[in-house]
Length: 284
Image (cartoon, rainbow, N blue to C red):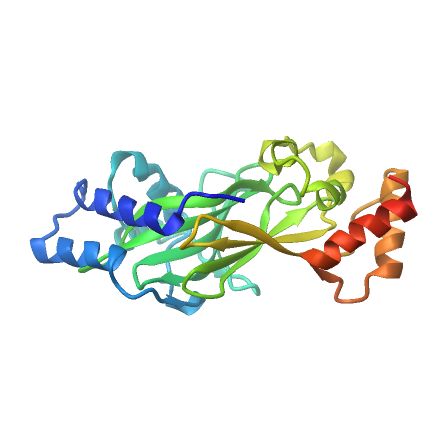
């Protein structure tokens, strides 16, 4: 599956942002360093500990500044929200409740850093309803320790089991793996027509939650150098909250339990074999 060359897109975005800054000024040396870092430096990557810590509530504000071509001093922004507590979850995510929302929150899980210049974060934005997930790409600004540009997102708009991102990791300087939550229907059909199975366009009906509960994850591998995204594996998970809602779901539950051994992870070749055998057993 083709995608825009993400590294090129980020490089262009960072160069463009360098000329549009309204919150601080860049010297000629700093500008040269930024362009050099974004475009010609040796490609590197590092893990979650390389990502700076931010106040979660500053992330939506940073994203809103994208249209203005501005950058945001995340340290100054954190002072604005200093009375709002930041918690760290067992999964390594930073979490803060929204001040103007009873049930809303912002949480982010650091993913890693590319080329010592671009930080990746898995972000969850919950209003009154469901948390929406996105992967943010933030640009570091040479000479400005905690000032960041919002560059772009991928996997934007996932809603829990309807395409929500469960986890993501950099596995090399050119590859990003993303685990996307999936329903029974999506696991069985995601290789079909792309548009008809785009979970980002599905409205989540809270009254039908059981029929939309997670049946597993689909792992995508983004190549950040070429123009490719490929599916790499499918993981099956038994969700205790999912009630049996139709004959197809009953057969799915039984087939997975009896035919896919723990840890119930299939590569794409094994997944194709699963589909063929599943269709014979469940008579789709």
